[in-house]
Image (cartoon, rainbow, N blue to C red):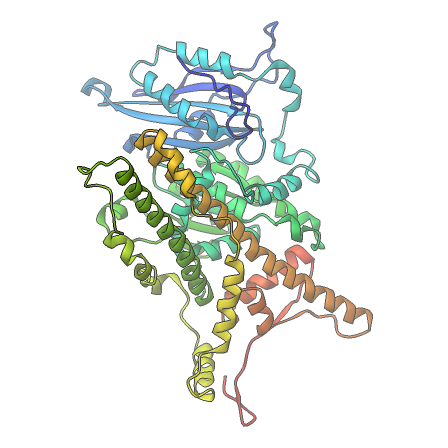
Length: 572
């Protein structure tokens, strides 16, 4: 029997479902809808019935899942958010040696996914029970009756276009602002399956590439993520990038073009059946039509007019070989997108802080286990580490190790930057570069007071009352949640740095224009440094120009780089 969650917590309470479906793989015709339950009124009349056949099967079962044991797939269908749990179980040869099935639900839209992830664990349990006997649908009926949407709530959903298009001036913009601040709480509570819990994994997957990817999202680029199956991680990436690209409420009022507040639309898993829809969005190049999605269908990669940025995630084979493979990011015209040298230094600073806190957590856990061994007088317990492990002792050194394949991730240092820093070293008789000192201080301010506290002794001791497995799971969730909150806050601080600096420059230029001076906006190298960008990178210069056009309506922005003059002669 499926238990109904009675908790009233906003994060724990299950969202009501508008439809529940079961998709199975028929060896003769492929994926077919085996069973579905949809919202209906008490007198049997349909209330805006959701069209499922011919659509949901392909959204919930992306290409390549037959090679996977299980998966969680997020998608968008009409005005609903969807989630499906997939299972693959062995079968006899007459059934092609496998049973494939997916159980999914559609929920009312709120935020980016309608909190559909709260159904994830229960859907996995349902599909595990039904994959070997698809005719036993009693558990589906029971789950539907327990969680179906109430008739009186139907009017809130509406018909026709997705809710992301209803009242755009106050719905999608407001959602962008609320989601930007939603993970900044000092005491956030995220469920185990919340997409943000994978942010730590994304940081390790992308390394410093996470920064140019966030900048592309800020510019409302159409981003297509090519992913091998399973797609759960890619779907989480879609969610997280859309959150990282939001404009923090603290700087929203500075913008001169309020239309740019539309959030990047997360479409999650898409396939070849969505090409027509993507073509419609491409025909009207407005910020509100920007999107981010993931797919396993290679044919979408060839449709370069439908997207602006392509992200290719490493294959699963790369993980098996043990050789670190980085994602490949490029534009629709084939130009590689790399991190700047500034991104690289920023990434190392961020990882040092995260590793420092993680090291503190390990040390506190070791101390707790040692105290427990003494309190319990358990002299036979040789597992309690009385001193830090070698791994813990090396953690401080390990965090400074250069990234594998770093040269492929970042733009090479320009000759101008090399000449300038060499000149500074010569002119200052080898003293430490003052510019790098300023940069380090800026990174420290971005990291200052981030909500990443180490657990208290009290929280560790309270865990003794639970099983060790539950305690370890809770500890992992606490760590992942802390990292998620930190990374979202950090990304929004970076956005605020760029936006506030740009707003100041625009304001000064407007004042000069009123005084009759030249009104062209000029961005100097010092301005780029104030924004936390790379003054030597051409890509960062182009980024600022596009930001000024998108958010402040100012075209024709000029960037002026740093130069080195020696005795009146320009060296570089």
